[in-house]
Amino acid sequence: MASKEVFLSWAFILYYGLFLLILFVYAILWQQILKRFPLTVAFANKAITILWGIVWGYLFFGEALRWGMLLGSVIIVSGIYLVVSDDK
Image (cartoon, rainbow, N blue to C red; front, side, top):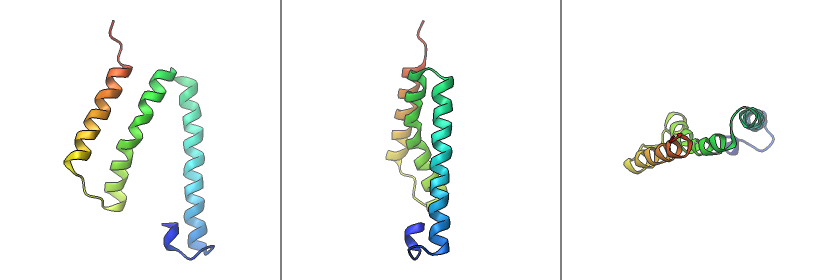
């Protein structure tokens, strides 16, 4: 969104600032996740960001959902479950 604005305009600075704020919050949350969960669980679930990308793309940018995307999501979630589940 910032790229559509004039460089260093108020709108550009606002969008860019929002982007930096989101990155800051993400970094803090990721550090807290690493503190509280085993590394295998934390890093296995990091792949879930692909799913969030699909959701945000659909909701905010009007991207079309395709069967390949949905199938890929199912494969990712299945892989996370297999890595994190405890088979005892």
